[in-house]
Image (cartoon, rainbow, N blue to C red; front, side, top):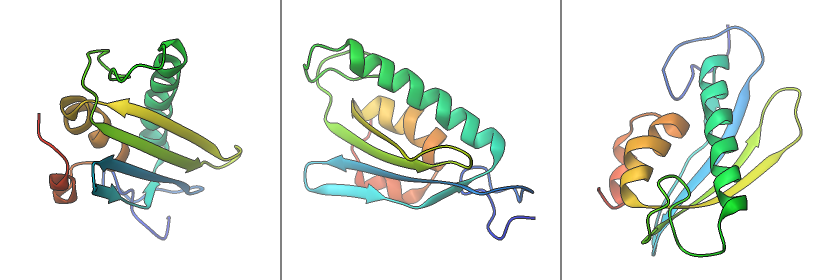
Length: 121
């Protein structure tokens, strides 16, 4: 069994540890965390990262949300991952408040009261 339970789903898991360091920033408010994840939660995070990176590559530098593509993205996501067997990966994304709290944060950090520093939908 892993020394730490999965931060996102709470389950204890066997195997190598995967760690990510998400930082959500809104103005002068921020939420940063060290997140250790099990295999299934790591896969969900990986799929989310891929879709956000693809959206960022297709954007024209505007401040639209990388998730829903609507204007007015006010939250910045900085994410560094160290997943077993892979090189370090970094991601930067613009997000609106709703996508942050409803879609991105639950996948990356689970449901946590610390997210209350960020704007609600």
